[in-house]
Length: 118
Length: 116
Image (cartoon, rainbow over the protein chains, first blue to last red):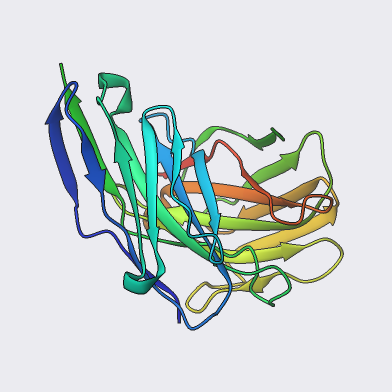
C-alpha cells in the first residue's frame, strides 16, 4: 500500500525566512508520481509540481524548489524568502504510474500548515 | 490549464435530505473523475473513482449506497449524498483526468456540505 508522511503538522516562520516542508513516501511501485499541492483558506487545491520517479533532478521555480531523493524516499519542498501569501496548508501526494489500474488515485500526506508572519 | 467546476460551492441541508454535487470539466474530456472528502483540519481521502459509462469504484469503507456516483458523460460526474447526516458534513473535492493529457489531473474548487 502507498503511504505519504508529512511529519511537520505546523510550521511558523517570519517573513523572508526560508522554510522546508518534509515529505517521505512509501510505495512498492517502481514507477510513480509525486506531487505537491497548496491549499489556501479558500480550500481550492493549487497544483505546484509533479515529478516522475525516474526524474531525480531537483527543480526550482521562482522561490520554490524541490529536492527528490529516491534513496531516502523523500520529496522535500523549500520556499525561499517566504512571504505572508505563502501561508496555507501544503500537501504532498503520491500516485501510481499511468497504465496501472490505480493510476491517478492520489494518496495524500497529512498536510503541513505553514504560517508566515509579517 | 484545464478548468474543473463544482456546483454548488457550498450547501446547507437538513438531516435526512439528499444532496447532489456536480463536477464538470469545462474545456476537456474526462474519462475518469475522482471524488475526495476532506474533514476539517484533515487530509484528503479518496472516496471513489468514477469512469464514464461504467459503475464507480469505491474505496474501502465508503458506503456506495450512501454516496451515489454517476458519470453520465465525458464532462460531468455527480455525487449524491443520500439521507445526509451531520457526520457527512465535509469538504468534497472532485478531480478530473484528461483523456488527452494522460498524466494530467485537475481539481475542482470543492463543495462544502453542512448537514444540520
